[in-house]
Length: 140
Image 1 (spheres, one colour):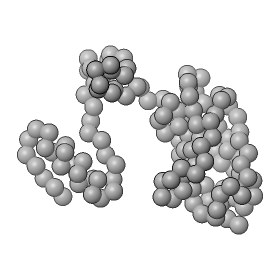
Image 2: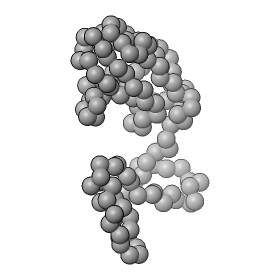
Image 3: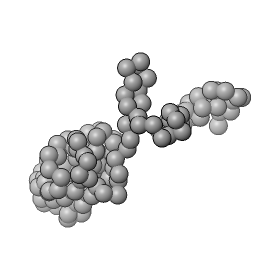
């Protein structure tokens, strides 16, 4: 563990330690007006994150799982969603398939011939934030 004194050093030390151990960590963000002001992207070069989508109202279901034939990915989105995609990544985090979602509720049929046998992560990204993740196992 790397340690440091006061100021920004503890945050930088924590970030370096986590990076060395393969852990993704971000320092806390200080919100304007105690978190009561709306957030937006700044023109001054400081990017502020937009409010995260409500994960509770977004759904992601994969059937069957494990799969050896066709896979059905069912989803439901919050009505305030402006942009959503379903991302399938391999065990190393490499994006294999990116499926744009245009309806608030639906399902996608995916032939597992597009995927080699293995374990995949299927993530529902709403406005660039991952809100749901499911494990998908492909067997042959």
